[in-house]
Length: 105
Image 1 (cartoon, one colour):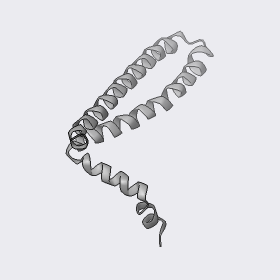
Image 2: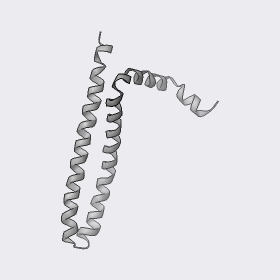
Image 3: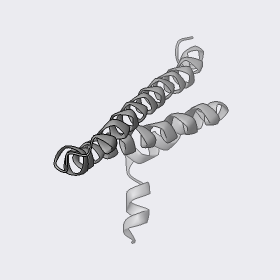
Image 4: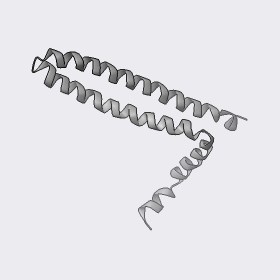
């Protein structure tokens, strides 16, 4: 018996797939929520690396031009991350609120 078969036949995985079936009418919202979740995580990793680059190239080399443009870039990255965080929450909530009548009858 392969590990894939054993993994997908666990009761918790079967329950998860059953819950996903309820989200089928809201697949666009669900896909958008997962996509923005991945983007938020990517920005969470990228922003500290960008700050490291700012310190190495802007502050350590005392390059005011790089420092000025880097601060604007950091502001843009932070605003993008905030926007993606907002849409991730909005789409996840919209999909879950569409399920409320099915579970609370």
